[in-house]
Length: 444
Image (cartoon, rainbow, N blue to C red; front, side):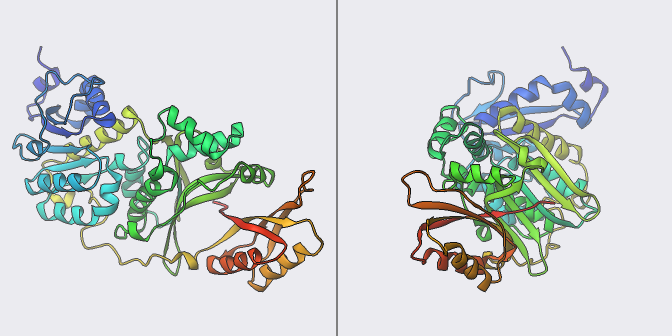
């Protein structure tokens, strides 16, 4: 039976080639099949998958009626494909595939944050030269439309800063540690059993995944080139249940944040565990959910919340990009929204602020001997570095223990000064081990 939309609309179908049939690829095939009519209506013409390139079939979706090839470059070279959807992951083959598609005059949709963060400058320039589009909404925060918001919805604003919980695995682990009192290792094991964490969780728990996403958002927010190699990255493996309990006592939650902030000296790009006030909405984003808080000079703070991963949540973003590209297939290149948010060559050479120059407040946890005068020594060291103590917790030592935990919240201080103060505190005879240090952000 003919599709009624095709009868009413003489414009030919937009032809899609999908490379990669994993979780996101299968989700994209399923959602496109299920919502064919709605997608066609919003696009103004049918959108059809004409070829799939994948090393193997995926039982999660039915591709028996589709042209399937085991050679993904067949899709990039197929003259019947208008838009290539890259869902294979990685950066080496994916880069070659996208460049081949661009060279052949095809538009590209990708969910590959590592590819965009590490090679986006090159790919965007190649696409501009060929007059085609690269769309990558699904590369950051899954189904949350944060790329469109930064590139289009907030275009009238001067973005001051943004902060995001942009890795669901890390957020799940910290949530389990706070709500169930699990240690990091136990919470990570639980995440792996549930399929939230990979067998090798390094990219998630050490902040590399979040750094990829942060640099993409910062590039759009501040009209700057992608600068993945300049992001300060710190993971959550050093966060303890003890720190989470003390944070609660002080009225804070610990979240793994990606933070980008505009300052007079340059842009801060940093990923690390962060204490944020419990009253902030973003402090109450739990489990595997993602959220991004953006502060613009005109609109003020806006919060974007939703599923940051998953087959259909990410497919939602992939298909949104397909429709956006399909709507402008006949438009002149300069009438489309640029991949980088500004016209090619219009990005500024924004300086990324070295971490030593970043100014913020800090949470410090010190294991000290239960002797008089320890706090006066610590206070003097901080004072000599221009750091004030804003709050302090000191409980009685546990029975039979010679060490007492001392928890301090400091005033805002430059990272280099705080680091020097910590080194001097650790050198005291009355202090044992390393001082735990977690940055504090009010996000107000």
